[in-house]
Length: 197
Image (tube, rainbow, N blue to C red; front, side):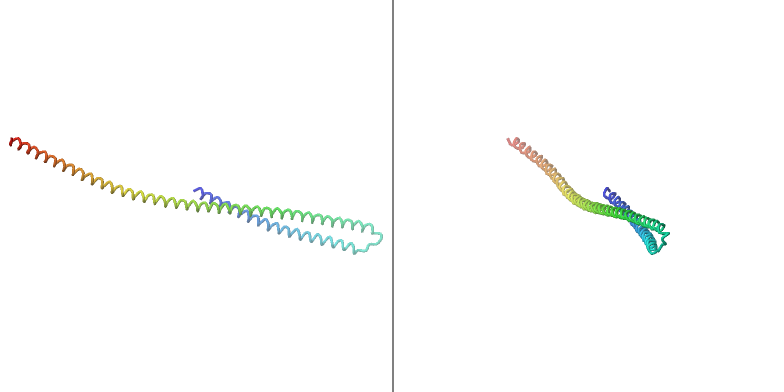
């Protein structure tokens, strides 16, 4: 019963592990979709920044607007750097999330391996216990058969003993009868001797 309960408990744990693995797979799919979206946004932002920078570089400003162009150029460069920083930050977060997912998947696989080993060990122990039980039942059946055989032999011996006792009683009764006959004959012989004298 303990092994069966442990077997059911391991089965439930395996089902929980399977559900956790499926949830992790779903989260991984969502994360990959989010990563693709972030990558698309990053490419789009980078393309816009590069396009703006190229437009700025291609622009030919009059001398009067040179200072304003320099300021706009600095602003565009700052915006481009900000986009690059955001892109690097997103990439860092995504890498951290990927490492975390990989670690979760590794732990989940290790847990599944441990549970698999525990399940196999429990199954092997259950098989060994069943074999020991079958062996004990076989030994008990053999001992019961031996006991029954000895009981039958004892019954036969008791019947033979009872028959011998009956024959012994009959022989004793016969001896007593013959002893009485002998005593009677002796008495008659003594009486004849006395009469003869």
